[in-house]
Length: 335
Image (tube, rainbow, N blue to C red; front, side):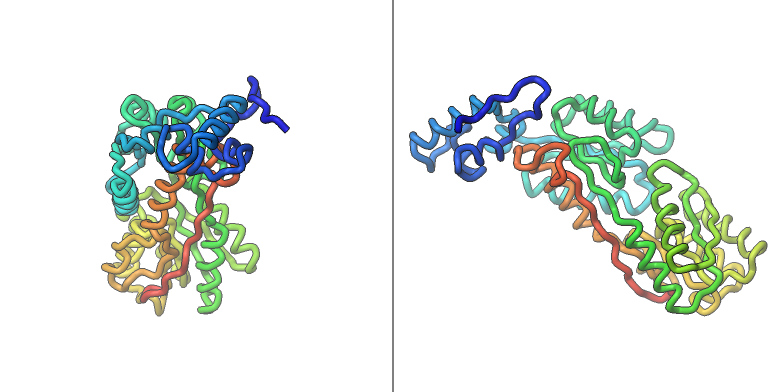
């Protein structure tokens, strides 16, 4: 059976399609298409013929990877003052550097516009983009054209690739731990930022219903100071609160401060669980129990996915390009 060339409206052929048609490995296709040694002339010609029939053309990025050219990756993040994002950025830079890639970081917080503005600033400078793009993932991919975009923390991301986090699993872990500790008056301190941030709150609500836990939800701004003020007000209105699950670890630092000022012992009077697992949690008093993401694993996954998209080993928009990572419960002193 002969290979069929792609036509307008069909998906673009990938390196994996050529490998399957030729009955060879992806590495052999790479050698054949880039004039590399290690394969016979007959194999080279067969692969090149099938690639032409399928309409497969290696991207300039894939050629760059083979030839050792530098690849520049844009990294769009919302707030470098939140310790989570520098830690994540560091993991991306570490992984990219091991591949000989450059990383250009753009912080779109503090009046610098939206994630879409960030993508617009980065697009002229980079070959690919990783970012917390939220509802702008589709538009960011349009700006980047055929250059791949990996959207983070958004299961609905409409980009070449995505990495989302299983907040339902995290919420079950956190509320399950509080239920086992017989906490009866549980509060979830959410972020008031909306957008993709709302996913955590929805997951906590659902997990509370599953366990028939009486849950009160409040919200504050994303800083430790704003969380501190919110919990100070909470204690005045609801002094019987005995557990607080917090949107992230940075806000949890403010929660611990408010509880200390309110003469509430942690965890005896009020248990506190954060989310994200940033190094700050171990430096707090008491040390913060948290739903932790391994940020090095997140960075490794993001860069690895981008590598696959650039080389053609992973098809844009495929199930292989949509990864989901999970938190783990790290029990310390606060709960």
